[in-house]
Length: 166
Image 1 (tube, rainbow, N blue to C red):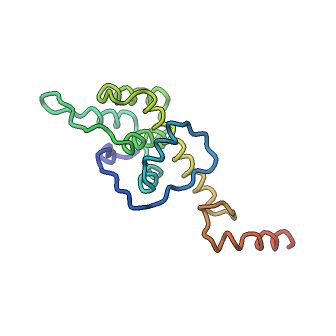
Image 2 (cartoon, rainbow, N blue to C red):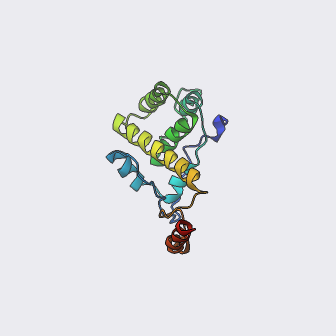
Image 3 (cartoon, helix red, strand yellow):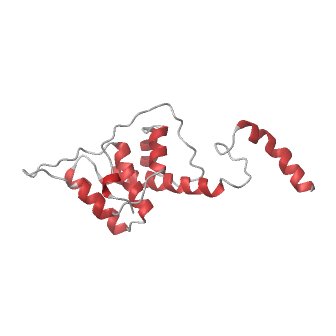
């Protein structure tokens, strides 16, 4: 686990033109797919690199208040919301822990409904799982788009033919 200070939902998103990485075959809900379209490639890369944070650290961060009891944390952006659930997914948070964090979000920012939170959670899980699959396949010979460059894809059939003949 990392320190709670590594959790940052307030950093603005910057779209630098990075393309969205491939997900492969996943079961993603319509809400998550719509949410993914609103994020930049850089956002998705950052989500895939999320570090594990426990639910208590996230809840503490989301509940920061000043001496007058006013909330000191701004409402999470789309990226921030997905990042919260990515941190939880990487940490292996239970369903109960995710529900507690969702409740904190709904209590502090009523504009988020349960569908928004489910979409963010689904997207986070899909992206983290896709990143894990991609890392597992990195050392294997493959012709999957987005894992190899154009030259490797063009050379793949001839390598396969030589390997089968040998």
